Image (cartoon, rainbow, N blue to C red; front, side):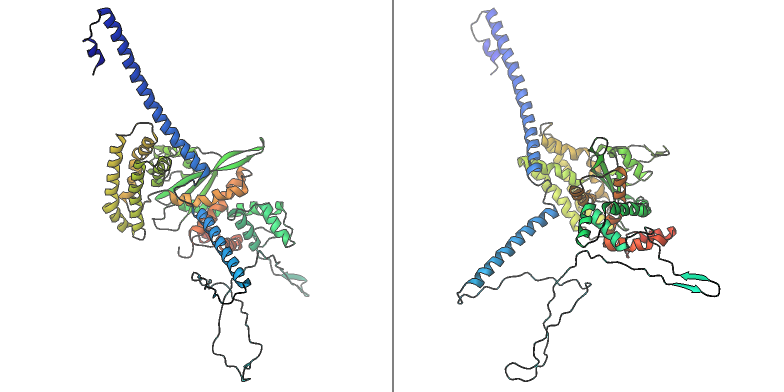
Length: 530
């Protein structure tokens, strides 16, 4: 009931009625203001609760939607180790038990995988002490043989190549003839290509600092000073740079690319501290033909101009996250970074993994049913992609037209309807708005059969380097960072194409000194199938 209308029914003096009416109106307005303040506080509390839960999960729990493969491996390794230790303790107790009436249960083992056929075999034949029967004394006849195999390994083994050059003289004309030494990638250097490859793989793929390699060599009585190792790394970085540049050229011929960046601490000698540099990464699209390529570009900052400088006049579909530095590439008209000529814009492809992550964080923080519904709908999109993984581009396009585009339309309608019932500035509103604002870029992939649904391929390529940063801590200089980017480009591309990076690098270092520039593509880590 309206309190002001009720006031008219009371037998009050006009002046008193006016005062009471003013007081009631003031109370109503104050209540409305309090209600708005409470609602604003509720929204802020919900946002802070979501943020707090997110950072608690980042600090004390897993940082991603699921355990990373490396984390799962660590847990499984621990479980398997504990199980094996318990089995061994049980066997020891059973062996020590004087009771002979209990039959030891047969240990269940998973089927052992055959050892790789390409490994060399060293045979050890175990013959009986006598060729006659121990019971009747007659000669034994071979009826078969039992073969078991064990895997073994030799740690890094150092050895020396001796190059002997006999010199021959001609008595009549008094000339001396000797064979020339094959050219080396480091002219007159101490290290053979096998040792150089070991150093580079250990440093840039296994992320071992040079002082650890120095210690490993010292255990075999080999003195390899850090300054010598650093000299080899520097010279090889220069020698291999043309190959990385050529890979970048090949990458820029592709019609669609992935792009991402990761921070790298760089030593700042003047301050005795580190500053933040960035390793930019660009990767080919696995759904399109051609060898796989990953190119790293080390830069001192995260400005979007670095992406513009690397891509130059490249045009095509670029898969990125929502970082503002890429926005200039998608502008209506962009300028060439050097000539300043106007270029057609690149076409943005957004990442569904990033959109999904917003809802995942929301669900982890508050068990939101809206977030759960969004996750289930997005999971349908990924299930369709899994179904079309082995299909051709044309077949995948038909599959997406039949299933993905209707699922996307349903998801869009649901997001719009849900957004109207969600208070602004809440975590739920922000998660929904992220997808709605980027909807066109998020759905472009479904119009084709050869564009990716997310940016996960390049994130997976960056992840090993991010893990390695915990070992080498920082880049010593900008030049060191660019050198690392060259080596990581070559080793990363070799790995993507199924090559053994160590074998490829050793073979390349042998060929490089005499290889003609006109055939440089034959040295690129593309594999024989390319």
